[in-house]
Structures are given as C-alpha cells and as structure tokens.
Image (cartoon, rainbow, N blue to C red; front, side, top):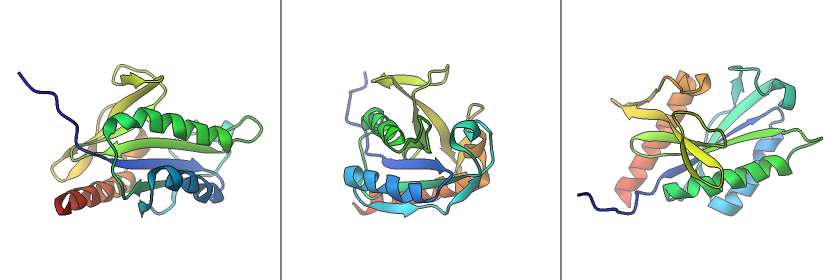
Length: 175
C-alpha cells in the first residue's frame, strides 16, 4: 500500500492572449502582487491557430508566457484559475474579454493547464475548475497528446515550455 504524501512544488506558468500588448504589463502587475517576481518572460508570439477568440477579442492576437520565481503546490491551480478569471473580467470592456489568461504549471514530467470546461480527458478539482495534462515530458522535450491544442503542439511553444521546465529543474537542484 502506498502512503499519501505532500506533492512536489511546481512551476506556475501563465499564458496570456491579447490584441493590445499593453495588457500584458497590466495583467503582470496583478500576478506579481499575488505570486511574486517573474523569472521568465517569453517573446511575444503572433497567434494564428484559431479564430475562436476573434469575435470577442479582435485580431491580430499575440501570446506571451511567464513563469514565477516562487513555486506553488499543485492543488492551488483551481484558486489560481479563479483569480485569473477575475482579472479577465476586470480588464474586460463592453462585456467582452480583452485578455485570455491560461494558468497552469510545469513539473518534471508534465505541463498541466486549468480550465472551466469539462471533457473526457479533464479531471475536476474544485470550484468549477478542471485540469488536463496538456504535454508530457519524454526523451528531453515536451510532447503533445491527441487532445493538445494546436498552438501548444507548435515547436515555438514547446521550446518556450522546455526552457521553463529546464529552469525549474535547475532551481530544484540548487535548493
């Protein structure tokens, strides 16, 4: 019989999708107040994988990822998703989102994203929030699953997430 134990701390990441780049900075101020200093910021990436957000947010859209110096316990992701949803609402205009915020975490073996949508591959956590393992770590890099969103399958995103994961693993070795 296995013994229940506290999970390893994980690297909080946030992916943001915007039309106006100034919203990255505004949103980051909220995150820094709650989660501490940012230790990684990706380059700003053009987003052309779907028109899903176009009606609500306009176009062209841009994506950016950030991660934080301080790690978190994985069960906190449900409350983090509620917090990021409240930021989306705060930064809305005319009842339309101007920013889409995707929180998740990187561990040694996976990228997990939080969502409000249920589906066969998602696990319910709490507060109306589900999670999914979006990428798995295998042979030195993240790899997608059949359900992984097209943008998260891209080499550009995987390279960024590999960097975040490698930074996390280096930090774990020094602490």
